[in-house]
Image (tube, rainbow over all chains, first blue to last red; front, side, top):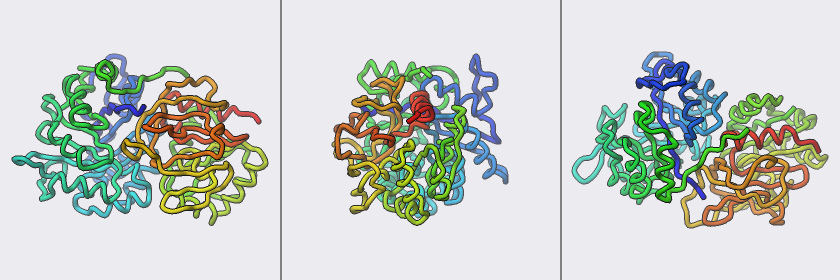
Amino acid sequence: MLTKRIIPCLDVKDGRVVKGVSFKGLRDAGEPLELAKYYNDQGADELVFLDITASNDKRKTTVDLTGKLGKELFIPFTIGGGVSDIDDIKNILMHGADKVAINTAAVLNPNIIDKGADLFGSQCIVIAVDAKREGDSWKVYRNAAKVRTDFDVIGWVKEIESRGGGEILLTSIDNDGQNQGYDLKLLEEVTRVVTIPVIASGGGGELNHFYEALQIGKADAVLAASVFHYGKYTIDDIKSYLEERQIPVRKYERHN
Amino acid sequence: MITIIDHGYANIANIKNAFDHLGIDCNVTRVSEDIISAEKIVLPGVGAFSAAMERLEQTGIADALKFRAMQGIPVLGICLGMQLLFTSSEENGNFPGLDIIPGKVEKIKTQYKIPHIGWNDLKIVGCNPLFTGISSGEFVYFVHSFHCIPGKMSLRSAVAEYGCKITAAVSYRNIFGTQFHPEKSQNTGLRILKNFGEIKL
């Protein structure tokens, strides 16, 4: 039976994990690979890395990061953050990432979705959608949630699917960082209109939040950052909670 | 030495990384001459069936691969690479494949979402040296919309439940295929690749 995926997200800047992470037993929690391995051993189903480096050699830092992760990470991982053209996608995939998350570039030039899907397959094209509520609907934001666009979220996710996007990483800007739960209404609306997988992001802080996003929001996967980074819950805590409530999850086998 | 076929945009890095991690010698090639002298072959693949087949034929890799497969060396097809080993595929029409394994590739028929993407558990239904040390119930990572229907169901060595029985792995003489990505399936997947590295026919 296909399981629901639990995905920790790491923000990386200049090759270092940004958010304050403090775990016992980790030699260097700022080292992306160390932290990735830590989550890998906990049974994370996938990992997402957002490279928020702002310097001129950003392309190089992203590719270096990807290459390093690819050599030692044998679960799927996605690289995002400032992916702007087909060359970026190609470089990231060639260095070992399974998927590329595209946000602003897709809003400014939606053809990148069609082109990326044609060249590399839909399965590796993840479109990140940052949504902010306005009354009864949601608008799409770009440039790290700083710039409002005229795109309506529901119309945009349909377009993403029809252009060949493989997955939608749906972040609620309103709920992000609040630890008060995912925007279930947003999830319900989006999962009703697309058939490609939807990853819920923004707001996961308690065990029941993950359950609700999957059960009520009908998400295929849940992504979170601080809840893992601050050690509030382990991946296994969440999976055990979900399993008790009949949500299928992958139990990690530690044999060699 | 394992020879990994690089035919375009397939993500070769991951498979090479996995063999490197396991300490198994491998090289990557784009030319048919290397296939003719290969001892073991991995055929990866992502994207569309017909485009991949076209590239294999243009480069002469298709003929070289068929030749070596017939001579009995171990061949492992992964994901689209497994599908390419079959007689034909109905992806975007009806296209001939390498025809190394009898059978066809068709769209997954299920009430669930397509593509079938994520971790699903294996049910081992047949003999396959790749599954030494692996039990039913272990999870592997899938990403696909089509799957293989072998001419004889006895060629299926593992299935996954997804509102239908997905062909997860096949074993046919010296030819093996996994629809899932062993290079992305953590320890279970690494064990499968290790088993392939250790196969002696």
